[in-house]
Image (cartoon, rainbow, N blue to C red; front, side, top):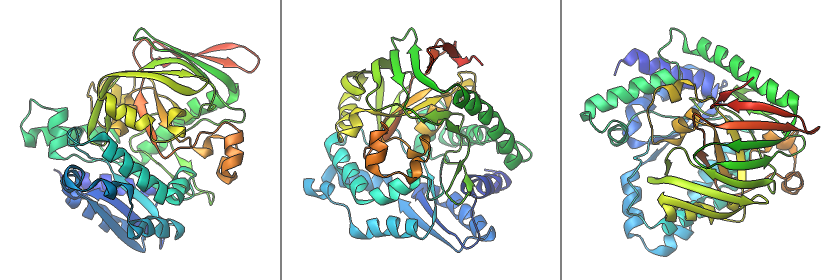
Length: 409
């Protein structure tokens, strides 16, 4: 791969994604397959002023060996040293960059209960770290680069090197690295997302009503004082960052007990190396009361049964069907990309920053405003070419938001 493009991408992640500050620590979570690119990111981070770059290497194949062979009780534990790694760096004001590049089907032989227990143990142990990121107290960014196994899943008819190169080029396009000045391109993109946010916030919708021919018929109540966000986020100190690269969405949160009806998935969901396909979820007073899936039912069940909050929604996100990732006609089998090709919802924890002053409210104060809490936050795609979303204001006025999959305003 062209080294100039790799360096442009790495610089974009450090300057625009993370927006590294002088003498700040950068923590990178990276698959070992991504080591060459991760080293480029590390070098550029130092050049841009990072005090230290700490890399947490992950090995999916080793994780699978553990899930397949370790004793049950190990998945109920989380090592103190790993907890200290995340929490101590977060308290020091570190920035966190995660590279998402998993094999979409690596874990399909693993007992879902083992993975669920492991995820729950980790989420419990590092709750402080997760809360800090979801309240934007630390800057963070999730991005991707190809691995061979992922590329072959996306482009199964191509040879490994051809599939990997095509996935590289597809990623470069979605994150605007293929433009002469990616940083400037993102400034323009953020401005376009802000126009959508301003429209949604100015209308102060109380309900969103979703319908399409797949069978989605859903009414979502939004809490009082909710905020639509998108593009960039800000820390309490005013440091701007991009949490997801790419991103095409504007998002808010539902009122925990205000979701009713049925929603049908429009794309497969890759969850920890397992695919969940053609699934539907039914809600009553916010709670999931029924669900089905053609494949991955047990995985979906394990997500929903994680805790009390995982039986409710935590995010509502709008993405026009006519968007760059959607128009690529590529199914990435990676939520970071697929969610940005489609309107989506998320099971589990809501972002506190989606209510006014939410980052400064205590857990009980957030709960009183209808903000859901959970150990999980799992996006799934619901947008289609024929999706209709009507917004209903506090005064009862109906305003089209999405018509035939695209913004109506």
